[in-house]
Image 1 (cartoon, rainbow, N blue to C red):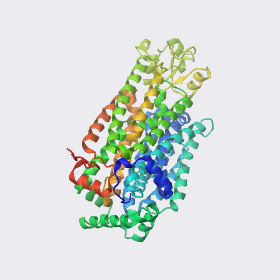
Image 2: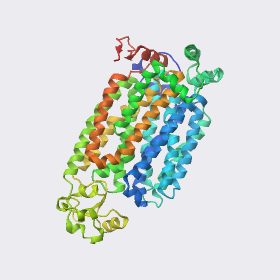
Image 3: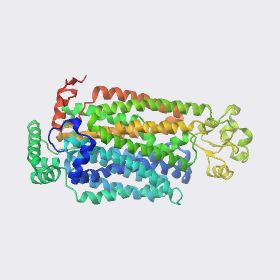
Image 4: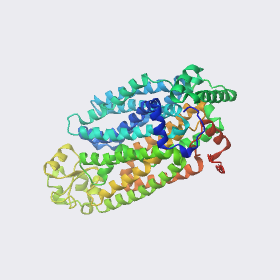
Length: 574
């Protein structure tokens, strides 16, 4: 953002953001164009969840190997880790605009590779390339928006990036549903991902570089020209004065320099202010991932199938509901983030998340406990060669139920009269799956028929409602404003890398955890991680609402959690 008048946080509401951008539409143009980086992030997050259902049907090896499914999903995250690290350096070296343009080109190429993939390995390579672009865009877009926004509406405008993330997820589910009846299914789903990157590339060509970055490079006239398009004429001189004072203070502390990535990181870690900023920035990014959100985003249809909804189309349609709630919750964040503050929203959000995860674990536990039994006669109905070999050789086969069957990497073909009656445990092959479906029976591979499965969908919706307004967008807002200017790209890059590393750990292990702990145990584990995140936010995260960047830096220098804009007592951090 650009320095502006010190405006009280309680006046910085969404209405003021609307009024300001209505009078100065150029501000919203900057925010929305850069925010398409969030759309890239969101589309990639959402599209793979539906595409995976059809990738598994096309490639039997993917259907059989859990680790291969996890790798296809999480390889984009692995690429994003590298992309975020490089993006932090590129932001400081070449500027925010060029970093976004490079991210668009990379993302577009990755989408093409995935769409034409002849075998699973090609999909993995394409996901890796897409990840590079997503990682760069994930930390560059909010930074660009932040540096081109007046302080009083900065949080709301940065939240447009979060809105576009959730909008991208919602759009991806619509695309998934649209292509379910086509022959190319997952290829079209993944290939369309290149369109937002192409749109952003074209839009960004006509937009300027960040005024703060330009001023750092002594391109004063260019910076002033941009400020004149953002602020009323009577405020421009004051903004230029604040920019001058900010950069002069940095030079007095030490050379800004471009330096290498290693030098930048060492310099950041040697600064007490940056370290305190990183404590806060990293804890919220890690907590955002370990509350399990991307298990819902990456595996949403699969989780709904855990609850007993076997149809791919039904699972994706129900996933669309959770995606819509995510987008709606982000709008709530835009309205409240500058009024109620970053820290408070995240803490309330985490309390709701923990509650929902515990309830969700209970629903899955009850569903697994009351799964339909396996019947020997039903299991030989399609021929003895179709019966699950593990079931045939099991000494306790008479006690098997649907969950016992699925745990042995077999499929459950529901009873022809009712899904809740004893059914068949069969081999997990395309041929057997076809026999089951051709008999007008339902084929289950992820979860079992359940009379209370609908409760899991309801609780997932409540989980998203709790997540989106707080932990969904606020960590990115916080990380766009908590570091000193000279280390903003580096600090944001480090925090973004921590986010993507956490994302990789969660997405790469989710299905394995479900196999080992069951769905109930896995979501209970995420509830425990969320509790730790809540504690970390309480003790380590300062409140930055309504503060100028310089005020945030002073707050961290003093080691305080928040500074009231109404002159109330400042509260010391631990």
